[in-house]
Length: 328
Ligand SMILES: NC(=O)c1ccc[n+]([C@@H]2O[C@H](COP(=O)([O-])OP(=O)(O)OC[C@H]3O[C@@H](n4cnc5c(N)ncnc54)[C@H](O)[C@@H]3O)[C@@H](O)[C@H]2O)c1
Image 1 (cartoon, rainbow, N blue to C red):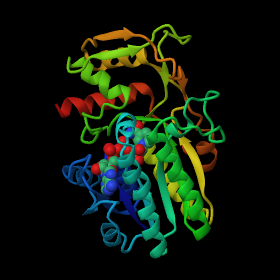
Image 2: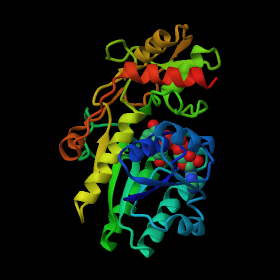
Image 3: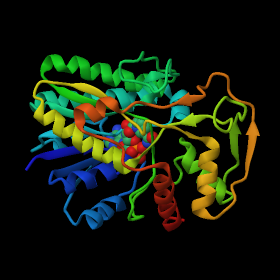
Image 4: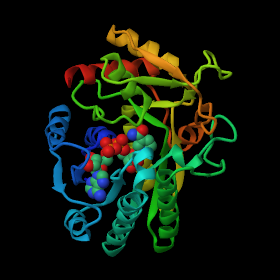
């Protein structure tokens, strides 16, 4: 059986991907420092999958932790990173150390142990503001924040590691959203980086929601973003891993996205519908530096990996609601 080390496997996207790996008969070991996740996630994974998963509490910034975790491993899925764009501006050095140096440590240990396959969490943040819509993988990369530049640095490091025989798939995801349909796994409810968790908080009166601009040339005047269900992302990782094992010596990059966009007001109205609660919000001035529409194309992932996002925005919001209601 193929054994995969999942870094950051107790986190939001990692935990859903572990379920999908177990469903597809991979053996899984997780390494996570639990800085942004909980140990209880391991029990939830076991409960949902009905299978065992190994866990090592460790940090990518510590090579000894990695050396312990890597024994008997055939390939990697690498999620562990800091992910807040705002925090990356406040603490660029800490972000570089965790995200880029963490990945460098991983590649160093992989190289020493002769492990040559890694699926990596990149981000649509590498594109910056799009020059055309939907964004394709061949479009110009122009990250605008330390977080986006971290992700691009990590992609470049992976490209360089091809010279020493390490192959990768970099997955550039757009906004991960939704939760496991069981209601047992989902995003840390304090994760306020994306719009959807903030709208759910606003629906409970726990957050003052500001909608930046309602006069754009869109369906309802508000900005459009691309939301992809976390379980679709999980399926994408397993397909990417299969591709890596079937295409010896090759590496590539793929967008994982919904291919269509949802406006801010469509999210607000959708959250009102699934929660049955009113969402209060304030319209404030738009930010001229922000793109009005950001959506991606998943045609390449469909063609090469056989991946398509199966879940629509309604399912995303219904699943997220089930998770938030169960975790008040
Ligand atoms: N959530 C999104 O919308 C999104 C979009 C694009 C890319 N990504 C990327 O996907 C990956 C996973 O995102 P997520 O939303 O699941 O984040 P998350 O914070 O929920 O999960 C990351 C996990 O990694 C762990 N971790 C962080 N640094 C570590 C270290 N040095 N050593 C060991 N463990 C460490 C955390 O404790 C956490 O469990 C990240 O790399 C993120 O940048 C996320």
